[in-house]
Image (cartoon, rainbow, N blue to C red; front, side):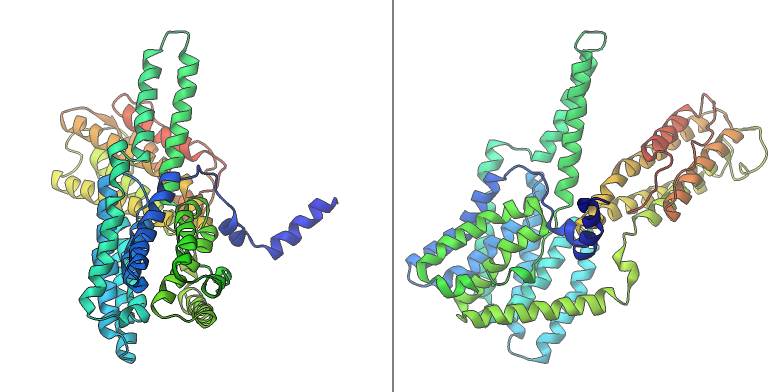
Length: 492
């Protein structure tokens, strides 16, 4: 065995895969506009306060600028504004107010923080905006319980913070005026342009080049959309020494230099990986807090101890008693949705008796009210599946990166449902379908469901019907099987 081959098992023990995923940088272009905007959002309020001789006045607006930077994850501009405003008003400002009101009240502050944590969890289950809002509510309630909450009057705390958020939103305008659509939208639009070019080239000599251009555009859009949804944020206790060097060696207006550098590097770190983001975020937050309550090395030591306690709480209470929380719930939800689609197809196309025998089923195969209820229920199941996919994309990279492989399967299952709905309309107008064909399609969906639920592979391509009326459904199921492939495990 070679030295390199022998070192691989040892490296797997010393550096586990989950840790390697955290520190492994992603390939991404340097986000220069976002870096410049982050530096301006945080450093301009501090510069004004330093120029006025009152450095502490700029802490709250700078903190608001920090939230405006971190909550802005790109995408359509209207969506970015909604996301930042929700996180700022119902998250940051509300959290600072709660923390300031309970500041210095001992167990009252602890109970309030526990209650806020519960509300934060409920908000996090309500989509992307709710997730970021719930997180900021909890984070800024914690900050409000510390030195930030000692500022009086209380309404000044929230007002100063919101001024900084407003400044961060103003900084979005130049990018919007230059390019009104987000990068994700532009990449998706490029796919449609490439598709149009491919259609124009049919029968011509440049068809191959047009097809390659479409493939490139599809890959770019796919990577951009999913990468934007898999970005993780957080703090890392191993970077606290940087919490400390800044606090001891840099004072006064000289602080604007590290502030500017660290703020500009936040978008860069976020585009690469979790650990690099934490490298820049942790010292920035610690130095901001130190402006209000100078503590030097003591603040860094307290920060490290608090982080260690928080890690212990998460491991002992958040993870150890609940092993299922380590894994994604996407596979069982996908399996359930596939079964729901199968049941609706039986009701809409084959009637309740399609599971046995053969023959023809007409438009009277099922009661219309029952069919309508099942259709709504099935589409709701698919919507829940989409929501779970979005939630999974916010998990650490070890889960979210593997979850990206499910996105084509989610889309393909929705297309199967759309084809069933269209075919059911044809059946209601007199078209007839083979019950045996419906049964074959359901058997295929059951195989998909079982593979997703058990994490096993599709043993082979199921037999599909040759029925003209069922052709749209058959084509959609065949496309789903093609996306999943055979011999490949369906796991996250």
